[in-house]
Length: 99
Image (cartoon, rainbow, N blue to C red):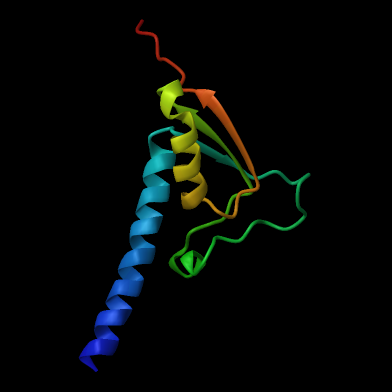
């Protein structure tokens, strides 16, 4: 019974951490997800069992990278966070001007 509970805790912890990472990437503006109805008539489904925890799926997103040298690494990392997305675009991180 202890082994089963431990495995369940690890399973839930993994998925909840995945959701935290996805939401953090969106909250910082690093990733801007979108839903493109032209690409699909059905809303995309969140990968794995993330939908059980209330996470929604995206079929397209834009990645804002800070350093052009690390652009490919950022794209790979974001693709792992959002594997359900089919289209990935990379643009430089917008700079904020002070008033």
